[in-house]
Image 1 (cartoon, rainbow, N blue to C red):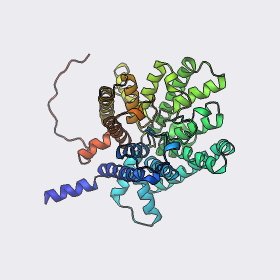
Image 2: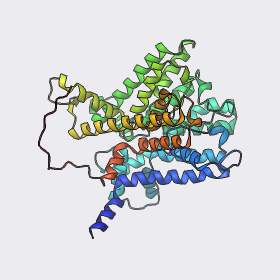
Image 3: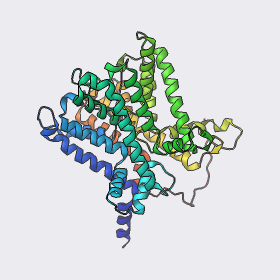
Length: 447
């Protein structure tokens, strides 16, 4: 009897449901991408490469072993775009949306799962929120495609230009980083549009909007410029997002792109500051940037976007909690706080756990890839950070990776998308509550 109860609890665990749903979509996408109909040449794609691509698309990363435009057929590109949309929206969110359309009753367990995916405090009103989120996603993506079409359709023609507009709008909003610009120059991303204000600003806007989180949208829509009424989480997200865009933009403008005109130089600096969190497009050759700038990009990739968004990474809230905790001993108040609100002990524990977990995965993954494939450790660290941050930026080593390294990066992408805490709570069957039993306090000298 106890075993049956445990199995039932395990099946209904929302964290297990999230992990299983992503794994299932990746598996289905891999099977479709293996088929000859998915490749432009009509060839079978190896299971490892299909798995890598499906994982990258579903986990909205953007790392690729084949150029998307030249290797995959239209069907293959459509499969990739569908995986991107599902991964960005969230598998559970999509499932609940389909249930709403069909008039099905939404159970409490589904509501809990969606609330966790959105980063909500409780499941109350989550179905109404889901409807608004789906509608907003469609509006933003259609608006982005409309703006991009003013550039792509005159250049490529109606059919190709419209497909490029829709593909890049969805890819940017979902923070995926996949592109279909490689027919003339494979793996070129958006480098041909470094001087285009429309392409740069539209893509950047979509990345930022998709990466700030669904509940932040709600505060912006409801309160406008009355920032004091925003949730604490929204205040942190918007503040950290602004800082992580402005500061790197200034650094890149000073340190890089000196041969560009001032306007193009600003666009290049802004784009390279926005895209590491966590989109994966690039408008310049990243290898041509200074080592310091590439180091900053690596850090940005690890940080990522906001909870309950289309972005991955450790999340800006995690870094904020870690920073205010680190500086709290030097402040007059009695504990970590932000915007005149105390940070809970649970949030502090989670932030430390995530920082340690992501750092361990970064170092273990990059050193293993370096040992197996012999690439420079800096390139391996960049590649692994891109995977676990679900970014998709690369210094060009992805197509040359061995099978083992591709599987390692696939695992990193999966962890980065579903979240480290989700995996931990799934292993604990969702038992995230503190227990009363505690060990005696022991003294340790630190520092």
